[in-house]
Amino acid sequence: MVEKFRGKEVSLRPVFDQDMDDFVRFMNDFEASLFTGSMPGLYTADDERDYFKKSEDKRQFAVDYQGEVIGLVELFDIDLVNRRAVLGIMIGQGEARSRGLGYDIINLVLDYGFYLLNLHSISLTCFTFNHRAQALYKKCGFQEIGRWRQSRYLAGDYYDTLYMDILKEDHKPYLIYQEIQETIGKYEK
Image (cartoon, rainbow, N blue to C red; front, side):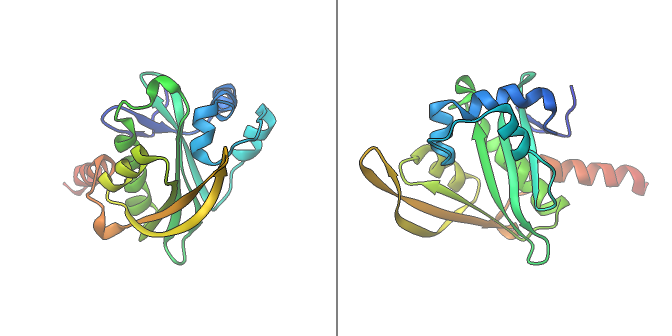
């Protein structure tokens, strides 16, 4: 198994062609797509391949848990001049949700963004009905910076979109940072 970045319970690795069936399944899963804002789309393997085409302004990782792809985490709209990006996360496999894996996933990608891409600010959006995600993002150090009122319409009700961000100075270094320091230390001797 290819692992690029190892966390406490998950690892982040490149997205491969053989992952497309998993991502098609995830994006057509009602619950998973509801939280990404991708409802009510229907997605094919070609759609997913297009989504994962290489681009300079995004970095996408398959999330691996116990040898299985369970979702995706990405930094997109990367602006290296202003040192900012947007974070997106989807745990597509239903059995992997509510296991506390999000903390590991988000902190790995924050380390990647802050210590390898040299970003200063990472933002995200979250719907107000997703209280679990809001609690997770706050636990990871994100702060609410704004709200788009009644911007999401679902089943007859409007919901707000929360805008949250974290600055490098607010992030507590995690495992990628530690690995960088240990690797540099081996070569400094």
